[in-house]
Length: 353
Image (cartoon, rainbow, N blue to C red):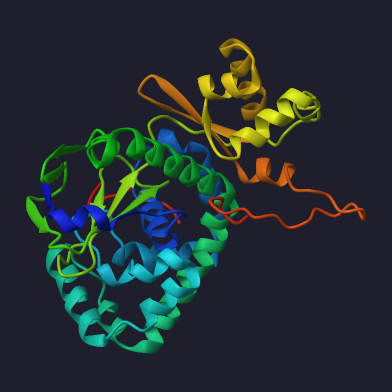
């Protein structure tokens, strides 16, 4: 059990990530490769990742260099998931390279004590070796994570819209109670099902909440309580198959004034009943419109209690971009939307999930 203790000033310093955190997604996806638990929820991604990694130099590097220092276990080094990665992959990788050697040594020593580590792990105190590690992390992200960026980003945008609504409707209590069944808010303590028994006192530092596409069941916190507090929590509640590319038929079904208005309305997020009211149609008709839009890959829908919230995907946002006289889509403000090795052993998220 992880007990996160809040003080009054912490509530004003709760932040919810607006974009996928690339290094946390790398870590959690590596955990997905290391176990069959939860694989059904990631079956399409897992097959694609295996096809990309097995029998390749990258797959060999992942197995030799990444898996041993990011084990699906109770501990892995905190310096591999720096706060800077909230601003993107490049700042995060730079922060790994710039980590003070004394900190790297301390965390690698703990990895050796808790889980064991390869003989080369202590050499990560040398900057050149961290630079080589970062090259593998970047290549892995490009090959295994980046191709799914739009799908991952759409889920994060939808999650953020859902949690924003919950916070406006029910306050911070509702937000902290609704994140995942593995968390229970008993003011002033958030109790999290965890792999070890520990307490985290926020002490006025606040808490950064990071929804993760590849995190499975168990939330994750940094091992070092002195670092800026962060809590990674899973998005998945059911299997999310890879959406098929919009077909000619599905896109053709989008034609029409009412459905175009529905898509514009959902750019801000709306429930089925809200959409029906705004369009002046019945809930059943609104449901039909959202089904067509969802089947075409233009929106995603997430259930919360007795309502379903619909939010736009990057493809849906692209459909709304104004077209210049030259036939080129003009740039639009997309605030709130994302930018667009296995071998013989199985390559899950947790400390340990």
